[in-house]
Length: 161
Image 1: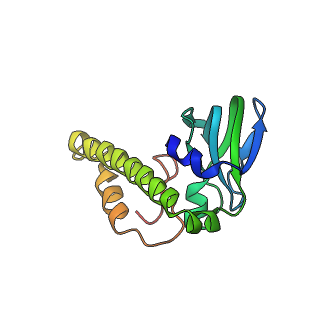
Image 2 (image 1 turned 60 degrees about the vertical axis):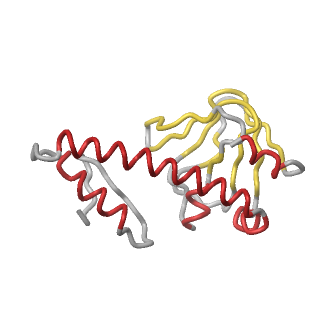
């Protein structure tokens, strides 16, 4: 992902102190964020779901590409420096190489998620508990219409499933 940094040179550099929020779950910004240095945490609800440490890591892409509010909060786990791209949709149209890099990154994430869910299905699909719905989740990932997605959990399930 470091290659993305080359396309951002000259963009708005922002220093983010430890603890400061960059993205706010539920808000819309239309911005894309690219890590230059530091460490950022992605937080969904009260749970840290990912940590970005590699220069060139991108955040905010799901909201921009789906034209939806942010799906998570992102905060600095240590003093960090990022590029903030205000009009991300225009930036991606003008920089198709970046859009392709992001598509590859998203495809890799989907591959990891699908592989993990397929393994869960293989191990627990016939147990009759909440893990039995993994097959439904995998099927919905293939046939998902372009709508708001809320996969839920065993505590708060998605009413569509």
